[in-house]
Length: 105
Image 1 (cartoon, rainbow, N blue to C red):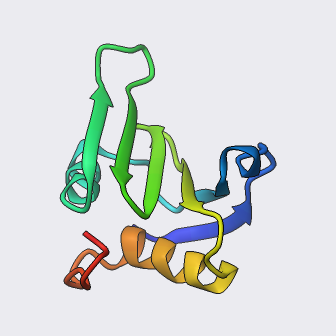
Image 2 (spheres, helix red, strand yellow; image 1 turned 120 degrees about the vertical axis):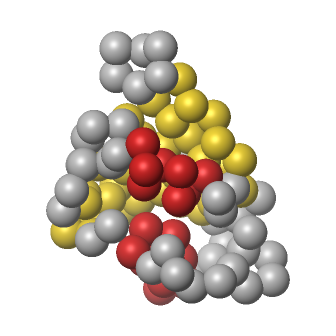
């Protein structure tokens, strides 16, 4: 999935110990793409909602969004460098063929 922009989230995730990023994608999130994300973490998916919300959870990150929209929020525990966060976002969303490194799955 191609990323258009990544911006630090305006919501205060830091109070909960997280650094959030708002990601705009070139395409909308599909159920197929959600399946690819789910393979990298634990999926919570609520298709019964009018806007089918999902969350993919991992010990090192969380991705949340709505199927059919082109926006996601990605969160990381505070402490990592911003450049490391951006590298992980690109790995998670753009490069489905890269095998996970130890500690990233």
